Every structure is written in C-alpha cells, then in structure tokens.
Image (cartoon, rainbow, N blue to C red; front, side, top):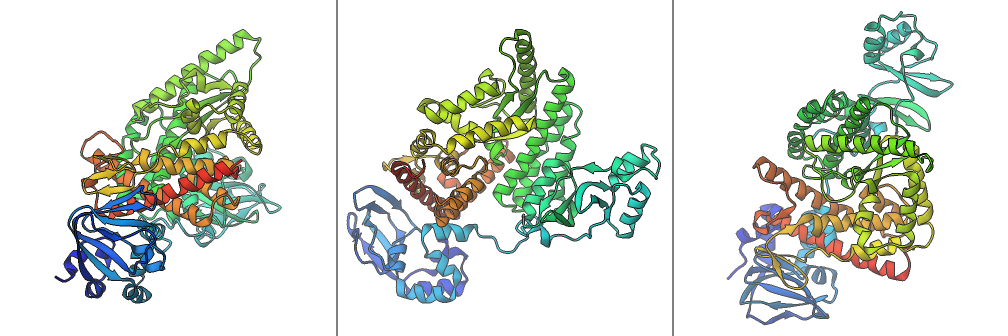
Length: 621
C-alpha cells in the first residue's frame, strides 16, 4: 500500500500546494499500521517522522497523563519534534486500529528549503496560524489601501490660504490646483479647512459676499492624521467624523490631503462612509431604523470583499457610534438642554471596536457632580437622564441592536455622577469582588461617545493613576480570565474539551474570542493602558515588557481568525433567516477552519498559562 496523493490533496494545509509538491511528499511517505492501544511513540522519545492519520484515530497525552488531543482522518501529529529535532512532548497511542502515513523529516526539510508552503505546513501551531492570517501587499481585496502609510497615499497638493483671504481668492486657488479643499493657515499653524461643499452651502446658498474672509466660513480645528498612520486609521477617522477629506501632518506641518476617493475604491467601501454620513443627519428614529436596516447588507458586502475581520468590525462600530450619537442628539432636542454636563460611554464590544451583527448594547452615563443638598437639582437630573437613557436604549433596539445582560445606561447603577464612579473604581481596584468581575470587565472597556469628554478623561485618569499602584483588580481579573479554557480542538463531529468530553457545538465567543479579549484586557491594564481596543492593549503590554512580541503577535492572529469565523457564521445565519448565535457545529466547518481553530486554541491556552504564572509571580502588579 502506497501513500495516496489524492488523499494528501484533501488534507489541509497540503490541499493548497502545487500538485508536483504533493507528489514529492507522497513519494517520500511510508505506510504504517498500528493496533488499538499500541503506542506510536512515548513522551520524551526521539521522533524523526511527521505522521498523518489515514484511517482510524490517535490519542495524544501529556507526560503527566493529561489529554492533549484526539485525532481523526486527515490530521497530522509529531510535526514539531520531527522538524525541530526535539524530544516528543506527548505520548501518541492508537485509539483503534489505525493506518498512518509517515514522512521523514529530513526529506520534508529538503522540500521546505525550496517551497515556503511546505515550510509553513510543518511549522509550529503559532507559525501556521500566522501564515494563514498573512495577507500580501498593501491593498486589500476591498480596494482599501489599509496597510499603507498615509504619507504614501497623498495624491493632492496642499493649497494654503491666509485666514484673511477672501472666499473668492480661496475658490480661485482651489480651482487653479484642481482640488476641493484648502487649508487655512497662519504662521505654519493649521487653523481650519474650507471645502467646495463649504463654499456651496455657507457662501452661495447663504447669499454671502464673495469678499467674505475665508475664516468666517471655514471648518475650524479640523481632524488631521499623522503621516505615519495607516490608511485604515484614516478610513476610521473619516467614518467616525463623517468627512471626505483629511489633512496629513508630519511634525505639525500639513504635507498633503487624502480623500475618501483615495481610500475607498469600490462601491461597497463608499457605501460605508455614505451610510455613516446619512445616519448622522437622520431626523427621526424611524428614519434611523430604515438606514440601519442596511447594515446586514453592508457587513455581507465587506466580508465578500475580504476586508480583514477587525476592520469590518471597526467599520460597523463606527456606524453604530454614529447611530448612538444621533439618537442622543434627537433625545436632547426633545428633552431640552441637559441640566448638567454628562458623557455617554460606549462599553464592551462597541468600545473595543469589535461590534458586529448579533452584538448587543452596552453603555454607561457619567454625570457632572451635583450639590448633594440640592434635592431639586438632583431630581431634575434623574428625571432628565433616565428619560434620555430610555430613549436612546429603546431607539437602538428599534434599529436592531438588542439589549443584553450587562451594563446599560437605563440601569441607575450605571448612570451616576462622577463621584460615585470614582468610588466604583476605588472599590474594584482595591477590593475586587469575584461576583462583580464580569460586569467590571465590561466596564473597563469604555470609550467616550457623546458629551463632555473631560468627564470621561477624569475617570480614565483616575483608573490610569490607580493602576500604577499594587492592587487586587488586575490579579483578580487574571485569575478570572483563566477559568474558561478554549477546547483542545475537534474529534470527528465533536468539540473536544480537556476532560475528554465531546460537545456537539462550539461557542466561539466563550471558547475563543472572550479569552483573548480577557488576556488583552489584563495585560493592557497591567501596562497602564486605558485604550479599550484588544490589539492596542497587546501592543502596550509588549512595549511595557510584560508580553513577549511573539505571544502578542500570536494572540493578535488568533483573535483575527476567531473574529473572521464568527463574522462569516453570523452572516450565513442571517442570510438564511436564522437567529444569530455564536454556536458552530464541527461538521458545518471547513477542514481549513477546524485546523486553524485548533491552532488558535493552542495559542490561547499557552497565553493563559503564561498569564497565570505572571500573576502568581507578581509581574502584573
């Protein structure tokens, strides 16, 4: 019996290799038969072959007897020990009469030297996951040059005019340089911008004199972006602020302009920025609901165009942000001027930029401190903000964003003046209550969305200050974060847990995404970062020396894969008219997804172990 090339061509990752490479691997292979209960190799043994299950099943156990994995047809084992010339880390035994293909590592090494795909296929779990997530080039399939630096995307020269220049002079300069934006500057400082849209709406339509100083019609303090930031970050700034042009700065000096047309090169991408703009102008909840009903179609279009998953969620989050802000503006219009300053906080997935179809609401309100002795003012504020929270929360529900368990501004507990919020933080940091940790975790992912951002900054400054002192919160969060470990992988039609039990479904949030988010939160807070985005928390921990660069990269790759699979799963259920859930069945997954999910789970379990040791040693504070 010889090794079947046709069978190899069905086994990820060999299924993606050129036929001549598969043929060479097949020619190098040998067939081995093992009986049920027979040991294939022992833990700590020398192993020179990579094994592939052709028929039957194999069980892998750690040297202490703990279950590591169970493998079925088409799955490899022994890769690391064979290719890295290391003793085996586990014992391999046949669960039933089994046929194996085995490939000498020496021959695979010769092939790997010439074929990158072979090198990636027989690397470790983290390296295989990284290879799967790697995208070549700077332009994604959606047509957004997301990886390029904005300095490389500048296509328009900068037109500068003095603040005292007339509208006519500004328009003449813009026309001469064939640009739709001019920077209003004085002494090298950017004071504002004026666009052709501004000229139409603020001059022509308003009947103003063409001798009007441009400073009277410009947009002051415009959004800008640094030249070393990415095209993706420029895209997010445009979406969040409903703008079409963005000055690019280098050392405080404007070096060029990027426009929506430079970043969004197909109709799906333009639809995102168009929808965000229309949402920001909606005049009623019904109008908002109609606009937001287009969100599922937009998510599907972005997925089909292969925009990276965390960029899809950031685009969707930006639109939900715009919807929330518009609901707050409509509520204020109806209720009148707020009786005191406040800030509406996005919490959880929305704060992290990870919102997608099927995600719920999470929010909080921070109010300006009021005189505790002024009962009238306190009652007035409570009446106003309870109604504002009700209107916004119910409005989001009308727009398809459901209320779930967790923090919501309609709950008086999460609608408080800044004083009680300070007390919350102090108690959480110094006396972390395990029963509260779930809600506390969500509330540590927060972002100011609307209102007085100084209130949010005060709260975050206190959090940042207190995190510099030794406390129990980070250690408690770390202990809580390792309570739920990802599964070991899959065995035939079951999800395999560490106790050997098989489950029919995988909850990809609970078993995959949530553990990565928890790890990022713990390390980010330990590093003193109050940025809620998981990738940036991992970066902060790496910069602080708390997380090895390889681990940070592996976790980022794992999160990318997990989010991509969840997005595709939710979108498929939505298109079939089914309730959106995070539960997947193994038989519904592709072999590619199953294989790389298993590698992602291994990365997360390893990171959980590292974090537990760091917490126990006091390295996390």
